[in-house]
Length: 167
Image 1 (tube, one colour):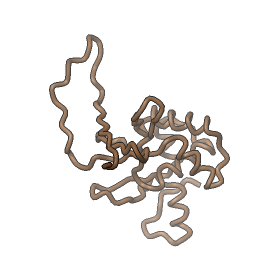
Image 2 (tube, helix red, strand yellow; image 1 turned 135 degrees about the horizontal axis):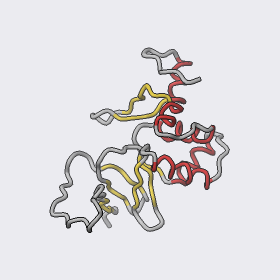
Image 3 (cartoon, rainbow, N blue to C red; image 1 turned 120 degrees about the vertical axis):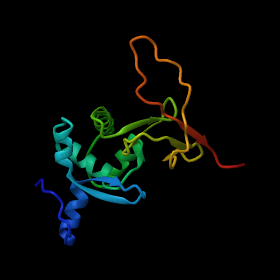
Image 4 (cartoon, rainbow, N blue to C red; image 1 turned 90 degrees about the vertical axis):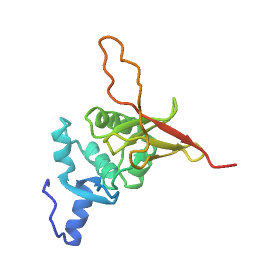
């Protein structure tokens, strides 16, 4: 059932909210749940809310902003008893990205993460841990970009600052 979330939920409603809402973060960085049910959010971006898409969206967006690889989401889905193949997870992540629900963060040729925060921001990547997290605040300034080639426009600039533990 697709209902808006109650303002003062009972424990059953809290469970329903956790399963059906899309996660966001406040400006202070604390997790909160929006009042937009997952099925509605999927329809709003032109995606049919299939059982697997809804289940994966619930897992993805119920924890606020975070960065996951397809393998991470697949493992979480299996733990949550959601029977889904890794290929379906990849396809769903790519569909969510194309629809604007996720942002792709490529850190290496073979390592890609999906970010639930689609706002403009940059990332740290901890090589020793294969972990991505947001660079807080407006600490990265981009200037003097070359002009885009004829017929092209610059869509966005992604900065990934690579880190490793001191040796």
